[in-house]
Length: 428
Image (cartoon, rainbow, N blue to C red):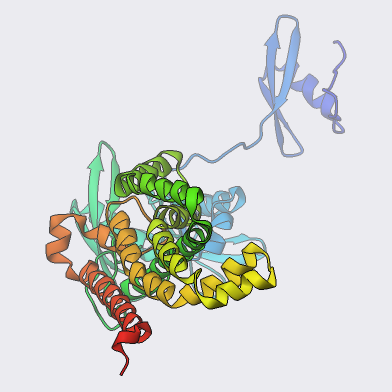
């Protein structure tokens, strides 16, 4: 007989060769040594000796843990092997990891009790698994689901941990059963009517309308004030130079003003709005660009007012005195002439502020002004461009419209009051 060559890493136990010889001479296909079964397989002149070991458990039994932290333990090989071996041998107990577990069978339902007398696992023949593996389904839920499937019903109810009774539907697809329920997920409360929590309701994005109106008022007023300031700066400079120097300079500047006035302002603003949409300008940058456009296109009226006032003021005695002192021209215009024009400038600026707010609101309503997430009164009204929304959700546009009305009316009243206050003919 030849040599016995073990595989690398394996050693032959004592008495192995003698046991092999006896089995081979007797024509046996296996032999047992020290509790291990060895199998003999003949391949030509060689004999392959192999051992048997357990690889896995194949079972129709489904083990469900009562607690999520015990799920891995219950489905481990050793626990399953010992528990199923006890069931095969009609044993009511088994020992695992130094603890004695009891097998309790009642009306066909098998429950494994731990050493403390508490239910530890449930054994059944139907597997109930959640779609989300991070979710743990209780044994009670699985029991009710199995009973519903066994009774061939398509609905069942289960009380969750919060005491809420939930109805589940069972849909069978081939040999699988899908358990579903209706869930209500509230992300945002869109178009919510006025309530204590939201005094003016919510918009189409679920935002509080009162907060949006306050924020939108800040944006609308900021656009108006900045645009008026730009109008004043450009108008005072051009009007002051034109009125002071007169002659050819005055003629050239006034013809430029006439040319500028011939430009259709609103179509030009609409074109700029469309261009910003195409370029996907950010809402913040869009607001600053809108301020600059409105200010740049509205200075001509102020320039004419300043020019007319300076033409009448430059011939007065205090200007003759400035000529005698020899001060520079810029100081004459901006230190002596412009302050005398300031009252009429304040009146003009206040009166034009209302018009700028209306212009901004118009652009916002047309979708060419301030964009979400920023808000202006005009863009808030734009939400109600749909007839159904305008008719049903009145709180989406009436408050913003009233604020525009009151603000513009207020600035017009202030402008009229300032005009009367600065008009000498109105004084008694």
